[in-house]
Amino acid sequence: MNDLLVNTPLPGTLSYGDFTFGPDGTTPPQLSVSSTVRYDEAARVVIGIEYLLEVEAIIVDITETATADRLETLRQQLQRPGQSLQITGLGFGDLQIDGDTQFGPKPQSVQLVPIAGTTSWQLRWKVAFTVIEGAETASGDWLAINFRSQYTIDQRGFTTRTIRGHVQIVSKRDGLGGIETTADSVRDAITMALPTGFRRERSTWTEDESKTRLEFEMVDRELDHLPFPVGIVDGEVDVTTQQQTIPQTKAVARLEGWLEASPEYPHHHAAERLLLIAADRAAKLNAAASGLVWPTRIEVRQPMFKRKAFVICQWERLGCLWDVLATSGVWDPLEGTSYATWKPSVEALWGNRGTANLASRLADGVIVDLVEHPHSALEIGSSGGSISSPVETWELPALIPTVTETTSWRDYAAKLEVVREEQTTMHYPAQAVTDGEVTSGVGTSYTVAHPALRERHGEPKHVVKFSGHAERIGFVPSVPSLVSVGNQPLLERERKESRQQLSTLCGQPLYRTEWTITYDAAGYIEQHDPPPIPAELTEIE
Image 1 (spheres, rainbow, N blue to C red):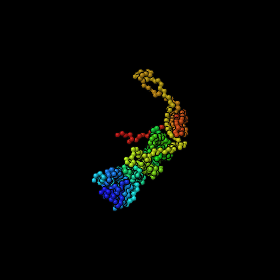
Image 2: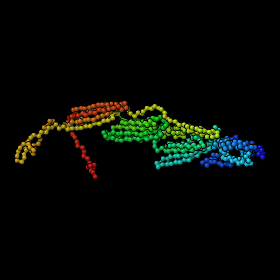
Image 3: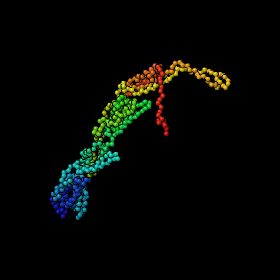
Image 4: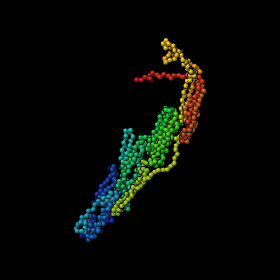
């Protein structure tokens, strides 16, 4: 009987790996095939048809030893995934599967039941495989892409768009213990266009364990600020103007802020852009003031291990704030700064790979198989990564204005005092006094009977005292002279003056001159009382 079973001819071929059903080794198999259609998550397209093949046969041999050898080979072959499955000439249709779309075929179970002693066994075997009917598939082919979009609008009306989705691909074993492709390999083929006026806040990419599914999330946020300068990813810069009246009236402008450069730009790029902004503001202030607005403070702070830079610049101009503020352009955007110029300079940061360009390698998809491909040590995830620190030279922008004779004045203060000299002498001679009815000389109690005598040496005159100081950049201030006061000519009586170099500002000397000059007025200077304060301004409730 055993010989009859073993030698019964099989009309076609059913094999898996190196094991073939039918003579020699098994009785003709009985087949049962069922299938399940799998759709993508949007339920729109078929991403695979899962087949379940069930085979029944009897394993027979002459001796127990021969049967045991045959079953050992059967167990090793029929329970290993990814082997070649061939079905031909059995009425099902010819099928040759050398790796399906999901690393199959995948054996599900092997059932062995002994019958008639130890030389024959009842075999029931189940194997699953996934195919797409009517399509030729290769590793890397897309099975499906699905995504959903979410729009969040905040209380200011700005929009945040979030896109979440996934890509499913075909991937097969390479026969060498690895896989032919990874889902991450299709990342560069996924492009989510960025709306105008948005920046990509972040993107997240998740590759599953089988490396056949790549999930992604992209968050795009509408700009709630003006575009940054080229190559800048973050920052804040403030411009402040104020009026000071002590010790003299002057307008003060201040620029303070920080910027952070893109990793694709040199380490000094943030400081360079800040100083260019400062130079632009300084040029506008000088043009608005029609004269010199001199920087009194320039401070640059560059952290050693960050791409941020901090700058403080301050300018002063003698005069009124309104002369500068009205036309200084403090509300004007920086020339050449727009979304159209900024976006291309940092767009690579928003790409699917970022600056590190990390990627999933084929070596990361290794299949650890103790029988065919054992491993005890493995390096994974080493692809990509970099430290970008380009070295470039740059020149400081012109923050110091060109000084001319008319714009060189930095400080000026003058004080005018008028002193009246009477040129008279008062005399108080001893006089008789009356104390009751007794007439005597000067005593402890007396009454002056006659006024003091006044001796005039000349007409009263005024003395004018003129003092002050002046500072100029690159030029020594001259000492001014008074010609007249109150329409009265002046005659210089005494002069004291000094000149010195205080310091050097950016290679240009700063000079200071001080003076005190005393004049005699040729005639009487009439002085007027100030006008009275209106009563309504002096009332206190």
